[in-house]
Length: 372
Image (cartoon, rainbow, N blue to C red; front, top):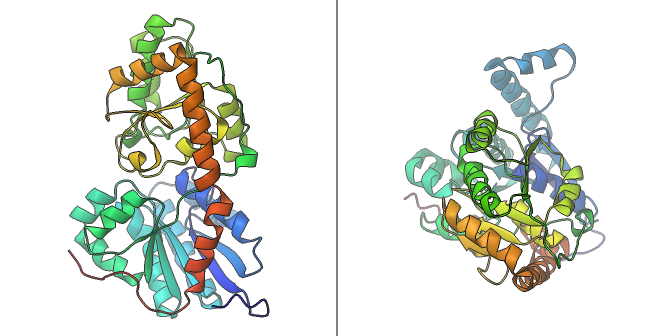
């Protein structure tokens, strides 16, 4: 496409979770929707995979199992009505059953109506998903192109014959207060969902080790999930003080929590390109993280953050104490990290890449459909 200002805008439909499901996918979709809607080259709409049903039908969404059925019916019906009116279907994707329930119907309906279909795969569970769900590999062939937010996932997909394209996550720097932390206070922050794969237990155990040497240390844990009760019990069991669970926090108020903290702890077992790490970069918070999945693709150990092996609570505590005792190290890491963030992980850095993806309007497949 030439970029002729007289051409009709490309009608792009983003398909994925709304912010009713807080997580990296929903946050990035909302950010992308906001920015893309400002471009005259595009006409952007959104279909939520978790639509709110109207009136009395909403009560059905409060009933386990029934909720899944009625929500899925409403979602697919919306796809059938609205997909014929767009040019490009951009489906956000996680792994396993979520892939089958959320993006797959969009891929199928998009193909049935002859639309260009993009699979925006974002899960750090990709290695296991692709290895053990061969049906998913076959169904992914419905996409004309696979987009991933990291070189890590591009590499994973290449092992199964897909030539995926990387367009990285971005942060709204203006929404995240920046503070130059020349003198670190022992105020720690974690904001991953409280699910097993994010291993917030490791963060809590590392913090407990820190508090043995820095009794006034504090930890704020934002987020919610199936592990919350167990993690709260663990804090009591360990006798750790000054730990605050603040629950589910909407993106609009997350900036204040970053601003209040001085060290960010991140200890997932599985990950891809966590928004929270690049948000910490933007905020000027030094980061201590495990090296799960795609994190080494966005973190340069000893240059932009400090990395430890997955599950290494002792190593995480050691690196956190190192930051508290070395202001020069913390300053160097945060300045380097913010420079990288402002260069690579902002809208101006990815705008042209997204436009290029959408402007390839032919049905030509850009990945090798070999099924491993």
